[in-house]
Length: 341
Image 1 (cartoon, rainbow, N blue to C red):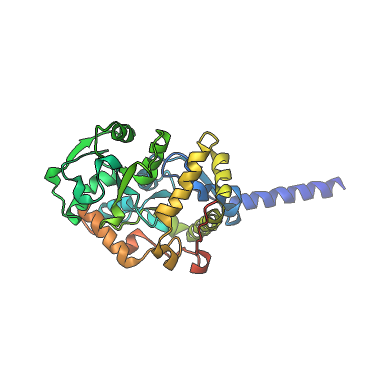
Image 2 (tube, rainbow, N blue to C red):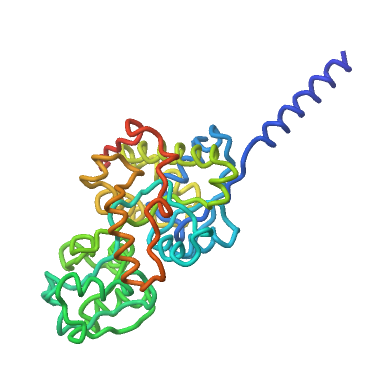
């Protein structure tokens, strides 16, 4: 009897070890510190969607959506949430090393110019004669000249003030600058935290509305992972998509997982940020047509051209170097319906 019990225990331990051996570990980097807009990754992990795909996904906080690309290229991470425009920049110089976007989440870019309504900046031409504050190297700042050309602005009539990102909103509120070159999903909530009303008292010129029809953040993976474990890539996308569709209908599910990952975040602000990510960056006529996660090749080609121009890149990558839809679930499984609650 003892022998049978020992044999059963040994067999059980062997099966457990086999299951663990078959599970693929994926090191995943967020685009920044914990935010409500990251909820899909936390839900997919919490609710076992990644595990069901045979994945052990280890999620770390990030250092910027552009840094996601360099973190993956450096080999420290297999996948992450980051900016497709940073992929374009790196693919132009190192095509064999840049990660590939496999699930586009933000269908519209967050690049914007925020200003107090009292300043009277309601259209691009109003920027002439004004002082804009921007952080050097950020996409909004780097693409300002392209924005100006697209909208017939004279850059000689616009004064640029270089500053750290954390100073933009305080200086804007004080009136030291007329407008700030920002990410709307960041600046909007910085203003809220500074006891401002970003809807009532501020105007927003979003680059996507004025000629820079770019894609933005999404789920990207290393080329190594695509080549060596395409099944894991497909599972990562499938599980993330399942969570995204769920959160769109019930943001409380998303916030429960956000708080479980990091209970120090401001729950009220981060729930609003989660909802903002849907209304301002994800839900669009194109997303409704092709489903969440996908892109249009012609639009991606135009977006690549804008980035090549803005950053004066040495070559123009092809859309297939930047984005792959090979791992997407069928469109019927990616039909996202957002309901604020």
